[in-house]
Length: 247
Length: 247
DNA sequence: CGCGCTGTTGAAACTTGTCAAAGTTTGTGG
DNA sequence: CCACAAACTTTGACAAGTTTCAACAGCGCG
Image (cartoon, rainbow over all chains, first blue to last red; front, side):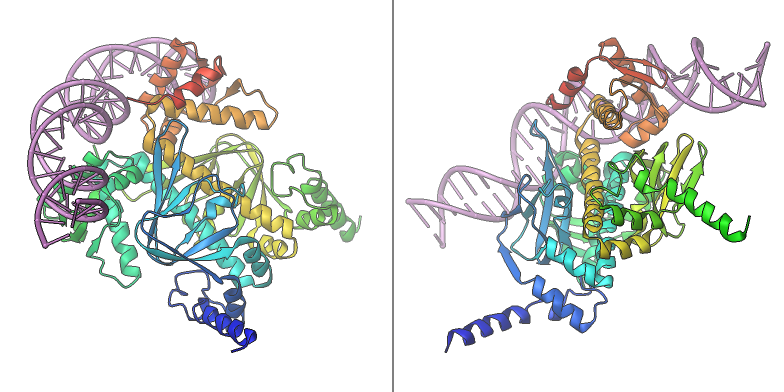
């Protein structure tokens, strides 16, 4: 086998696993692209990265070059301030993008950590900008993704600013449920990938408070919890918690 | 005067007040643009809108068409959930952009309300996308602005999730101070444009708690407050509150 | 001049955090 | 493959911080 044949073979492998035949393309960036546009996106997204549970995809302070699309797995992002306090700013799952925080200063402003063995596609940002100058649809979709992140963050601010512990946990579980459902998994039964402490950090609560809220939901028959395995028994009941005005 | 002369005259007025000679261009979108690029941006930003205190720039649920650059004045954005609870998601001042939340679904997801008489430049979004496909610098800068909004929101999440009342207020005041300073105003003395209730909503606190925190800061000599007039007496002291680990 | 809106202050109630102890699961090395 | 350590979870009792309720003061506007 000549050198060229080897190179060609490798190139083929790469293309074979790129966007054009990724079964996430309806969730991820390539929504609505034409076949030849998709091919050009494929050329960008050539780098894959595998991570084991606990690995950092990037760290706060590192230079920013790429955004990442999650191909499989589960991540958290967190920020830290000087005195050691930190907060989980989000949990990301298959098909979602990571790294948008780095664009503004060209330095990542948070850590991204795999909560289970995961695989991501690295998308060099400058090249993405270049391509989206050529492909209108891609540009527009990318802007929507960034904007959706802003809207999502407003939702979390709402949660942290106005909800009490049990409402926060209910909102969190319903959100997870809906995201699992969108990916073809059961919306009623799933494994949490994160600890009580991480949930608490995200929700602005202590882990004990999260644990108590889980116990309470279980007492009330809203769900069955055993460690990280959750089964939602009464979705309507959880939802009602949210709209239930307080005092 | 012929019709054409009138049109020409109006066009001139518009150009005269557009980006190219706006003294905010170092704060706003046109950072780093060449003269001819700036001129093309001018053509987009032809619509101005004046608002009186209390006016809505847009409302949640309205269709999204433009983003807005604040030329003068002061705004808040807030979101609302079904049961009537709402939360202020941000305060925006001169040179900052409003409306990024609307891109994702083409419907505004929050209300933007003027807290004092204000003036904004409307920037039709589709045209902005078009221009930023042609002007690399503009595209990149716009992406940075969106990303900065995400990073800012993470900061607020941190504040809401991990800080106690006095830390939140200190962080809020220091942030305002720094933004006034960046605009050439005194960082030590300024008028709050918002009520205690609005500050509380933003910080996830009740207005009484905000009021008490102000009183406490005053007792401790950190600042002098009289109604909405604030004078910071001890910036270092306020800053120390933030890094001061709790229990 | 007084009415309404905004802001301040006090006391009691409530929610969540803190500390502590014990139970459970997971991972590792012998 | 078992044993032990480490990490995570649950639960209770108590403490701390924030909200709630209530009363009142100050300012601005008609």
